[in-house]
Length: 379
Ligand SMILES: *Cc1c(COP(=O)(O)O)cnc(C)c1O
Image 1 (cartoon, helix red, strand yellow):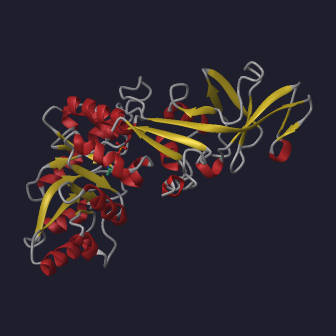
Image 2 (cartoon, protein in one colour):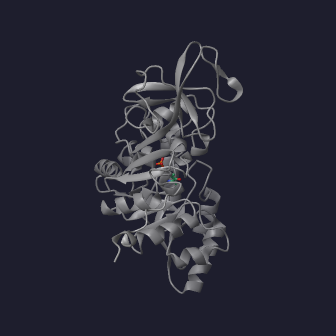
Image 3 (cartoon, protein in one colour):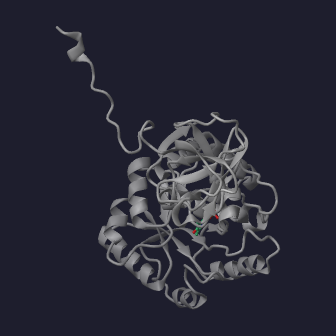
């Protein structure tokens, strides 16, 4: 038989294959696990969940969830029903998965089928989950969220009053947690933190006794009086600084590198990029990278890429699929087509990039687009 015919076909090139993609996103699951351990160490005996909403802050809810499971984390939070159903499929039957935004009216059977824990934010959602329990013929798990002062999600004090007066309010519901969310946890001196904590104390007393949960990442650093029975960090797990402006106690998690598509030299006066918003002040060497606003780097974010520790500023406008860099600081010929320059990593943290873009690290991570080749390491 002819050996050549037996060869397996070459692997199919997809948009996100390493050879085809314009940029490579490396996600260090080992660093996420270490960050989880660091938060656990601060929390002592208090349980620590993992927040995986928005596809694990853009880094892959399934992969991050599996890594956290290996650290013993078995409580997860997502924002939406669909995220919960997908996470249940990837993590299996065991972990508790809470849906923060509640369940849209009529979709309760889908939440029951995936054995999700609903976060109940209103009187109406409570009635719907009670009815779902009646239909299912068993108790259904839930967290009751109260609004302690953020005015976003959760039952207002008036709703809590009304429920407290109804002995049947929680029939068929297994209340796993009473929870609330802090609006200003990243500002330790902000008076709203203690005010919310006291309001939370008041509201919990009116509800059936259950474990309590109040803090996100930054709240963990407000001290033990905020910890209660369960912390719900997201950002800090992903390497975002939970204690700005102090130094970051977490490990960095992501590295984003873009490929050089072309290099060129231009003369003084050359217009660069759309709208010619930039003109060369003298002879320049430029590199165009395969990475642009369609990949989540905002058009208005003035920034730079880095190569071997050398800063390469953006020149001209960010395009959809490309950005032009001034590479004159590098020796001629040093940077070539196919080389990788760094957008996020040791030279520029997620928080640094956010500072240049006038936003927060959360938005940088959750904006990262679908075209990257994603490489998971350290799982
Ligand atoms: C997003 C979110 C968290 C996690 O917040 P981080 O600041 O990312 O740690 C916790 N609880 C609720 C209700 C949230 O919406």
